[in-house]
Length: 371
Image 1 (tube, rainbow, N blue to C red):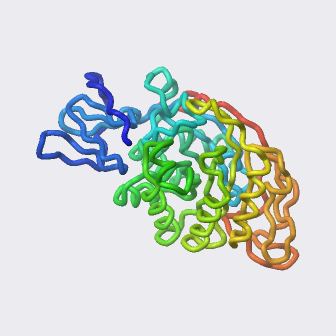
Image 2: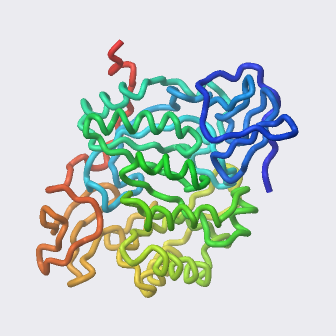
């Protein structure tokens, strides 16, 4: 199931990482994620960014990024967290899964340091977000759990300036670091890639069970606002029976208010032989989820105003109209209640919506450096 580790690299540099221990056979085991990569001196884990140097684990991408961009919060996707606001997004390189359909493969699968073209200290990122009018910062593009130490430091700098933090992640992390990581996050979008161990093993070189553990943890042991995304790949994870089982599990374990985004697949990376997801598949899946009791179910990567908008589960009023990343209707009170019937809408709302819209603004962090 696991892809091979990287060959010896004599140029590993970076601060000492957390969550590892020495083995009796002389190797060091990384305990950050369920892969438990066992490394000899000079070897990198499958994620590429964590490696062994001088009998310790180092994080080679600390303070380095594949780029920064201001996006609409809805692009994460988060529909119930500060709607309409701008979010400063960035990632590094590497990933601890090996999804054959990766939509960001040029970043997450990168083994080239040229990908990490922009560097910034945590405080610089917080200052940039503040000056750009961003309500939050997103760790995205590749999975932030693999650069946990950097993400935590950035989150602390952001929180000191009143900036929220968002993790866009597959949730593939072990229990101890899970606690530290999410203690520093205000919101998350968890990519629930499928609902079978076979899919995770064959397509992602991973496991489903740890992801479900993360979801239960977020719901029952944290105050993190989180939403789910399921990318629907034709003939792989899109059967009605799988969606039935998945949405029943969500309802029973996470409750009716967790938003679920069914998004359309477009051929990429190592799955170019597949076709685009038919809109009918998204519509059917949304219907199944709604029938199983989920209140906020969306379709994504397609144009569908009706199914991308938020509705009151009390009276059916359209609370937030969405056309891709543009908001139209806004029928919520300041504390997030339907103005027609007073039913609260689950989420994090703070007065009127933002007006960022669908703009995308690339950012050079060196413009905000203080030294």
